[in-house]
Image (spheres, rainbow, N blue to C red):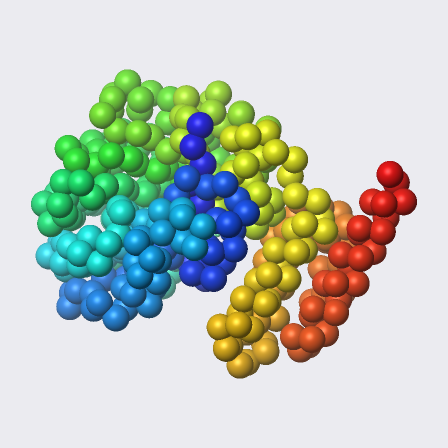
Length: 323
Ligand SMILES: Cc1cc2nc3c(=O)[nH]c(=O)nc-3n(C[C@H](O)[C@H](O)[C@H](O)COP(=O)(O)O)c2cc1C
């Protein structure tokens, strides 16, 4: 079993990838999507969006980081991919899954244009040296999951090693009931040369096992779940106990400390990121849910750290009392 940390724009940025990969046990992670315009991509943008390139393409703890590209211009995508590989990316991923309303003719909008997806994949593959992995991320359809086989035909070209599928269509957005891992099962036989990676709502060992049964996949990708249970990869693969609330809060604390050490001066940016982390973590814990409501009112960084420390002490005290 392998577990990947999903690309998450505005959430799993370089500092958070560093923190989550250090404790999470993930087999790889991704940059947030990097938009490729008709002009292509500059080295400066790539190094900014993927600082891991200056560390052999890996996060601080050694987790490989794939560069994810989003765009609709074949030549520009090919140029960007070639540049990423020259700068040391271990793999390039093409985003055909993003449903953002700020993404117009790219991301999941291309799911209804299989020919264009095919030509982008072929152009990017040709631009990459053979040893650099090319992977693709899609949804199970644009409007309907019956479109999945045709989408796979388009993207599962020779030289594409993995296709990760968020098991909802674009039309489904993030509707909980729409998730369907079982659509992946027939793909293993139909596309034997491609590893199919299952994605969507994997937040625990139980959901990972259910996903594995339903999808037939042994490589899973977790996104929001990694903020709910920061050591999710270890939980799924090694049977580790999910982090306690105090351990999860320690990761929120580390996030604050890392942003301070990076010299971020606007305190609101730092406190907002801590609140964002907790807004997911609380979904896995009633205690953190109650804490989050109070934490949302905290203003500056020192108040934020004080509240976190006091909650950690309270939680650790109550654990000691129980023992
Ligand atoms: C805040 C947010 C940002 C996302 N950014 C990206 C992105 O940059 N690239 C991408 O391919 N998918 C992106 N996604 C989709 C996730 O990678 C993933 O497919 C989706 O959240 C379902 O997985 P999960 O239930 O494990 O979170 C994003 C999702 C969220 C919630």
